[in-house]
Image (cartoon, rainbow, N blue to C red; front, side, top):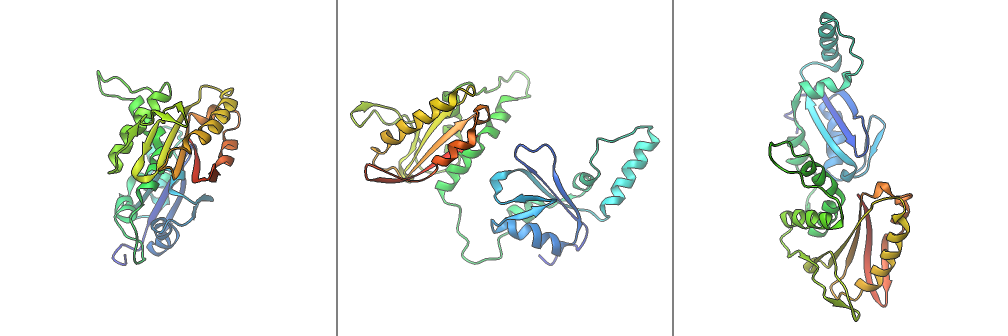
Length: 275
C-alpha cells in the first residue's frame, strides 16, 4: 500500500438509522490505513468522528476518497460560488465536499485489498445467511421504490412477502438448497417452517409486525416455535426474523432470547434478528 499518495485522504460513514454522515478529512495515507482500512479489513472496531463502528452490519454506507488539496480548499471554492450566486447556503456539509469531489478509492482499498494476515478464510455460508436476513429491508426498500416507467413496485405487506423476498435473495448468495415450507408434520401435528437450509442446519422463521400490540403475540409464537422446531433433526441454528420490528413497543427486549438453547435434549443456537 506504500504506492498510494500521502495526502489528502477523507472518509465518511453513515450508520443505519442515522441521518448524517460521520466524516474525517485530510488524513495522511498512513493515518487512514491504520485507523480505518486495516480495522475494516480485519473486522475490528474503529472510530470515525466520534462514531464507533464495531461491525460492518452497522453501516449503511462507507466511502474513502483522495483529493490533491485539503478540505478547506473545496469549502472555500464552494462558499465563493454561493456568494457570487447570492445564495446563503447553510445546508451543505462542507466536510462532505472532498467526498464528492475526490477520487473514489472505496472499492480498491476496502473490498479488493486483503488483510495483512495469513490464512484468511472465506466468510462461511451460515454467516452469509445471517447477514442477508439482517439487511433484507434494504432489498425491500429498493424494490418498493422502483423508478422505471411502467414497472410495479414489490411491496412488503405481510410475512409471506418477506418470505418470498428472503428466499429469492438467499438463492443468489449460497449454493445449498433453500426450501420453503418443507415440513409437513412435526411432533405429531401439522406445521410449516418458513425457510430451511438443511445442508447448513438453518431454519428461518419470519414474523411481520403490524403494530405495538404484536409484541406479546410474537413472544408467545417464539416459545411455541422453539418447542416445535427442535423436532427437526438437522437443526443447528434457528433464525427468528422480526420484520418491521421498530413498530413494536420494545423490540430490543426480544434479543434476550438469543443464545445457546437446549430443549428436550436438542442443542442449537437461537438468533433473534430485528429488521
